[in-house]
Image (cartoon, rainbow, N blue to C red; front, side, top):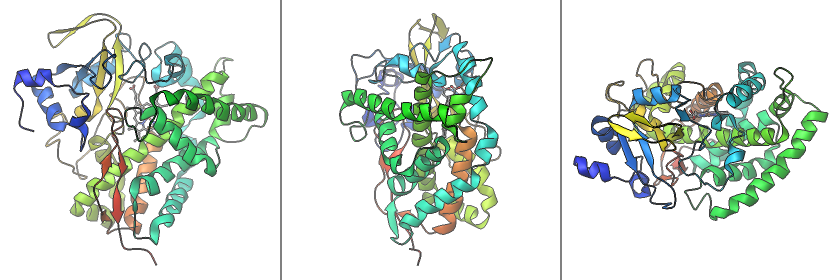
Length: 412
Ligand code: HEM
């Protein structure tokens, strides 16, 4: 896109899916960072919804993320639409859509169950799951990297942690796509249909919680059901909501980064070769992948009072989109931010949030999964290449592809 005049820039509707068809509108974000760091858009796809302010600079993302009393996660949840078909009260039972003091309690209970030790102990399980998924395509010499590989791995990893059986993975992926992928008719063909999905999810999870309370195992569902801080435990409804958050975050996030990272490596064979020759570089490369391709383009906040920013008035109740995809390409922080460079030193990014209390609780798991998934894919299929046009999910929220056709030398 040629750079827009200031007037055109002001009139841009960032929610227009046409802008996002092949990639997020990175040029628009670059121009906004330079000329219009606080920008207002309507939501033309859903005209009954109030519009939103865009926060695009790295520093502003940080400031807002730290100031939870002015910029609430709880008041309107973390999606730009007030109504995605999921009751706001249900979403507010998840830590991601809570402010203190509710958030303090939930985070403490959550961290008691989802420990670094539990995640690290899962390393070899993750490697086995990854290789099992790769075995499934190895002899074919071609596949869809999203559905045939990425989705299987991330679903099984979170399923194995939560203690759900493998035969339920496809159903759980489908549910999380329906809930988070509300803008894409492939993911959610019937917008209202989500109500039935929520009812089914409750029916699915409640017996698992009852079981975890009476017959404890060493899975994460049991650990969450039994977590206790100052004599306080999670209620059944909170457990179902948390289970849902983990399922959705576990499925829709790492799969997204894996797909886009593999795409970038196929487009940059020299960098891919560097990682194949020296896999010890993959851990750092994952950070550059997260910088360039964060799984979620934004999270929302809602202003709790009138506040002025960059000479404009944000009113109490206004929505703000914290665009991580923009903060991660801020030229005041990164040299040549649009360039994918796995040798970039010490990459600090905002893919897991821009700081503060909502920093992603699954970051260690996501980093580990991505490292193992890239290690094994590059080791087994070093000549993987694109075999058709990748297709992005239609979504402002999910920064992901729903199809990445690839081919490679089959394993004998
Ligand atoms: C590459 C993968 C991932 C990315 C890019 C990512 C990104 C994020 C971001 C941006 C937030 C902050 C939300 C905010 O500030 O409003 C967040 C929060 C969260 N994430 Fe992740 N996530 C990933 C993977 C995961 C995984 C695998 C899990 C767990 C299975 C997870 C669980 C959570 C939870 C529970 C929160 C809420 C934390 C809180 O509000 O205290 N995430 N994630």
